[in-house]
Length: 266
Figure 1: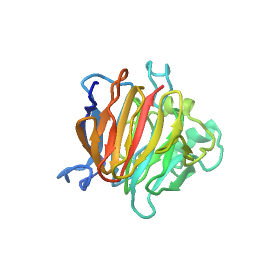
Figure 2 (figure 1 turned 120 degrees about the horizontal axis):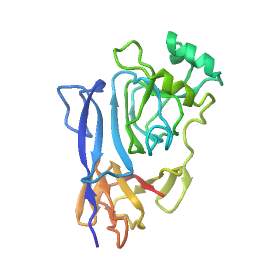
Figure 3 (figure 1 turned 30 degrees about the vertical axis):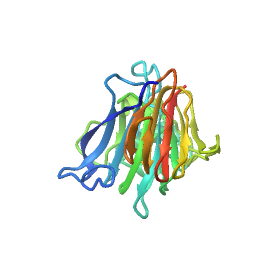
Figure 4 (figure 1 turned 45 degrees about the horizontal axis):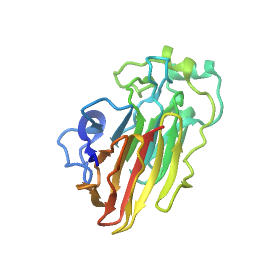
């Protein structure tokens, strides 16, 4: 049986990041906004932990084939949220493309978005073309197609490039359905997202319980609570593990109550 591989976190400094990273990582002297979990080879999916002390830009991502072969559809699972913390997904009401263009010039776009107060445990699916932003006071796990193509529509006056000419033509101008509704998928599992780019489940294991995964393409287990073993390797909160794509799979055993995001590429 091939063992699981623990991915390596790469911490990225951001102007909107945080210095308090516990319990996920040691606290930092500089503001860390993202932790990318990387393998020795490029995977079709990328997992990040995102830490925010300020709002991220209002942005949108292209779909497959629009700016390179791979687009950027993503999802967010909220891990921590200060009281009143919000994200923006879609608009409060449908708008026209002309109105969107005008709003990006004045900054009004920030106020046209549907800002939603979030709580830990919620999941939001943000397909390519969804206009979105992440607010301050949040720690979340982002699962996305492995692409870094981002078009900014508004950045609150910060001196970074804006990509209105690329963003406005592809933006979805309608409403977003809001938080995902989990669907039972097994004794320990709930399906959170099922898209052509990836499927994600929430797995809950009590102390002493185990789960034997089936083989999947680019199967990642993201430990968001607890500790135990994957095969012969110990896991802890904040780890991301890549399982073999074929053959026998290492079993996942919890030594204390654990929660995982399990995701794979269909």
